[in-house]
Amino acid sequence: MNNGFSFCPRCAAPLETLDLGGLPRRACTQTACGFVHWDNPAPVVAALVERDGRIILARGNGWPEKMFGLITGFLERDETPHQAVAREVKEELDLDARTITLIGVYPFQRKHEVIMAFHVEAAGEIRLNEELAEYRLIEPDRLRAWEFGTGLAVRDWLEGMRRKP
Image 1: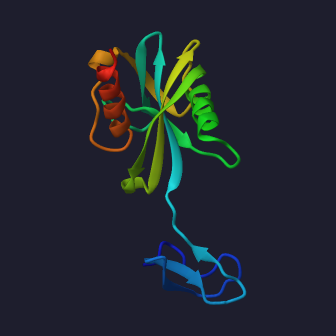
Image 2: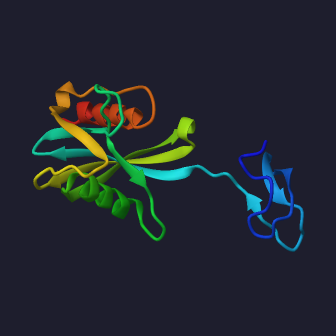
């Protein structure tokens, strides 16, 4: 196990692989330093954005032509997940979040992330930022989940919608 670290980023001493909490971790050999590379997943927020009764799916620049997904972004320092998802919706779509409701929390091992997914009712005129190539507006009854990442949140949201009276 290396995780890209051979030397301590604090004191430059060699790192060793130690069993900490039942998992192998890269740790500094200098007792006074105490650095441990915990290698925790990055926290990400995802927004299933609804505007005027339709769901917005977006295609990122460089993505395959038919690949669309939810609005996502990293949680920033000193930011709550609710603040982060509202910020991402504003940055990427130029929409204002009106209501924000947690759908669920999902591991995304392939990208070493944990996704906090929210249903966001938003208002305004859609204007894409430089990260996105295009978007689609989908009627909720035509929305289909995918089997990984944010698709799990889409699945759970759709199931919740079916259970509503």
